[in-house]
Amino acid sequence: MIRATEGAFPNEIYDRDVLPAYHTTRCVLIGDAAHSSTPHYVRGTHMAIQDGYALGKAIGTVVWNSVQVSCKDFQDAFGMYEAERLDYSNNVVLTARRLGRVKQGVFSAKQDLNWDLTCTSSELSDMLNDKVIDVSMCQ
View (cartoon, rainbow, N blue to C red):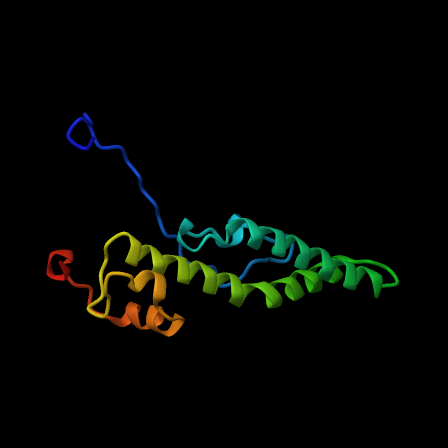
């Protein structure tokens, strides 16, 4: 099948750096706009749903407790949403990036055949500090 293929097809995945914040005074980001990640950790859809729930809950809390709703109330709600979601979502993006490195052949000296399926979270974190070695050295 490989020999019969006339040309390779592109399958490019790009990492985007995590954001330091998800809101400004008049705008808030949710879902992939806030934290797009590679598909290796399979969390994108449920994170967007969680974002919507957290933002709705934050806005509901502020509006419910406000006598007269103002722009400041929405800024407070955006801050509540960000406080709940930022660290978790950025962690998911970074974990997906780490898993992608493993699954796409950027090896660590610690890996064995099934390392990407059995590794612990701390091993994934350690991998970012590992010296990246040539794939041919791992075969």
